[in-house]
Amino acid sequence: MKTLEFDFLKITITDAVDIILVALIIYYIYNLIKNTLAVNLLLGMVIILAIHWIVDALHMNLLSSILNQFMSVGIIALIVIFQPEIRRFLLLIGKNTFLQQNKAWWGYLFGSKNIEQNNLIRIKPIIDACKSMKKSRTGALIVFVKFYDDQLFANSCELIDSKISKRLLESIFQKYSPLHDGAVVIAENKIKSASCILPLTDNDKLPPQFGLRHRAGIGVSETTDAVAVIISEETGEIAYAKQGRVRMNVSFGELEKLLNKDF
Picture 1 (tube, rainbow, N blue to C red):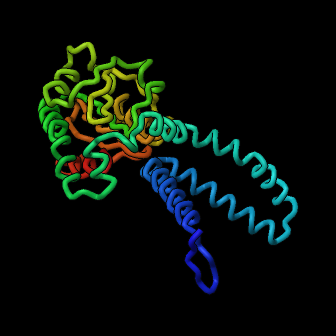
Picture 2 (cartoon, rainbow, N blue to C red; picture 1 turned 90 degrees about the vertical axis):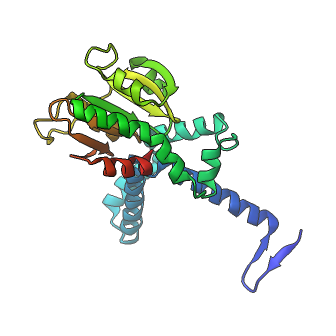
Picture 3 (cartoon, helix red, strand yellow; picture 1 turned 120 degrees about the vertical axis):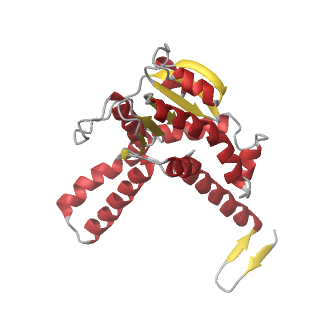
């Protein structure tokens, strides 16, 4: 086996391939969890690990024994805490997303300059529908997810699986539509489902004017990697929820930038 020799180390071709594969796995995991609550959970785990090392070095026996008990079930805790992310990662592999012939995916992977322009084309029908519903003060809740979780949405939604369309979004949220009472879920550049019942946030510090739409939009952004666009029926104001936080009175320019970044 041919090696690259340096004064302080020897790297074989196998070692180089090993490093590249590990780097790719880390890269894909990062893309999977970025802009999600999993980042905060991972940061919390790193902080606890650092505290454990410090406590152990200072020979603080009581606190060290408590943290040792926590660390002894670390692998199980990681599986429980990151269960949604692990499930999405396996789903990603199972659907052959890495290998499928998808221009958007390959453009994203290799940094194509056309991605932003193509994404804006996909976003335009959503922006146009929001403009129309804001003007008519039609209440709406549109949820965007990176990976459509059949287990989470299928039981409480009407499956649509349709191309994103301004007219379709408007018709779904019309007051007398049988599907208007609930959320529309968009994933994989499609309107996947409508009339979805979502978990409400437990946050008791929200403004009193927030109704069920706002609480559902915030709730789904707390428990998943989803972002939500909420249009108030009373005021027509547009809100944007992400990671449990909500931005109020969003302009169409801001909405376009936010969706282009997150969608």
